[in-house]
Image 1: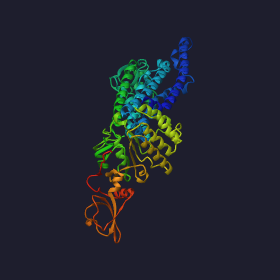
Image 2: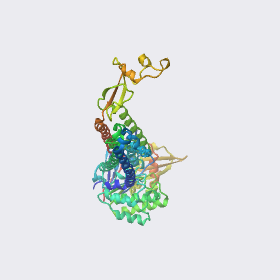
Image 3: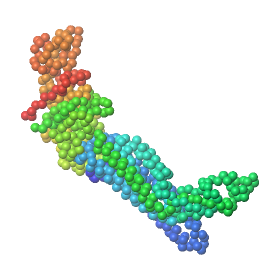
Length: 316
Length: 298
């Protein structure tokens, strides 16, 4: 059975291995340079310039690489689109399931082998990718919140890959045509990813609120925190959100002609205004990774169970 | 002796349409059976039910005493060639044979290679580059390499040119001659199959009309020619399959129940194709049950 999977898909394996190797070379070379720059900068920065400018010395001339690393966001989806969705759909579309399922082995071991190897391939590829990207980004992770690049490092890329593959299999087992399977995988994957990232992820754990002195910035927030919202709180304790109407600004703090647009932050501070932020602390990064990964793996398990049902119970 | 195929009231419904209904047939082992019927009569449905690719809505089937289903015991005994001649386009015949060796208990790769070599089918080139006839030969080779006890072929020659058609049927006949093999070949044209078959299963209107050895079918059908009369007053001794009238003559294709006693009829033998076409033209089956006579294997 494994031989059949290998014989049918070995070209995909070769191409995937070549692409991963090329990416690894690129990231290792540029990542090493970047890490060296980073360490060199901190060795000398105190004397010549401010150490808080570290971001400006890193990533010089590496714009394309940064884009490439950010683009690895879509890699898990590619496994779903080009490996998993056609896996069953192409068999049905070309009628080869009629050949495969009338050989001397039953459908279940056939399906087991196919499903197992597509998952192994996706997990190995995505695992290698996330290790590379997490390592490549380590200087930047030290400088900016890791939450900003939540989706391309840690363990979630592997979970996304597992989900994308399960989705592709399930959709392929329903539509039995390659193009509809690919299109549906694309749409559903994006929908689930966006809903999770935008609506669910901020609420995985209760956000922490903190009151800061007024300053029009979040600099007072804990390092590396994921800021969910920031707004003004008035002297009476009223929360204004991030917009303060002019009529709510104490007259003494308005500047410019006709009580113009400008407002002095220090004046607002002196009149009892302060800033409130809600955030997820940097220390929760791995907990969030775990929760998000668990969600996608759970969805994947349900989808695989569904695909099994479709293949084993429905007529070929 | 176990029957090669036995079905009882087998039926398959897709939505509200019955693709096959109330199909009860018995085919002894060792027959080369032509499964004929017009398009949409349920030939493909019947074959797919028999090999376990789909599940019946009603009734049951047995192949060599085993129910079609997901068991290696069953799968190792059947060879199946689907209508569209499914093969992996980018793989070669050699690749298919190598895969087959891994997914079958018994596998005759060398026999299949020799057969393909004899037919000059390039076994190292991707299937996509082969002609239709060559693909059919590869697919037949794969089905035979399993060393099945029963081989079910769904319209294997429909897409082939006459030469490839003949070569395919010759290959099949040779395989049948080599071993104890039961074969069912479907086609909407009996003519394709008559040369190699000794048994016929006729499906029409989603029901079985005939399931018998060709000799027996020929022996039991006659053409009657006589003066014009209505069919209802023709008396017993036969069932009318098809009646045609001219101004002063009536021509009947009948299935005999006994001797034709009325001397007004001129009785003559009928070709199998004519019998089959007559059944296909009927809207309703002749009798409630299918016509089946099983001869014990000699």
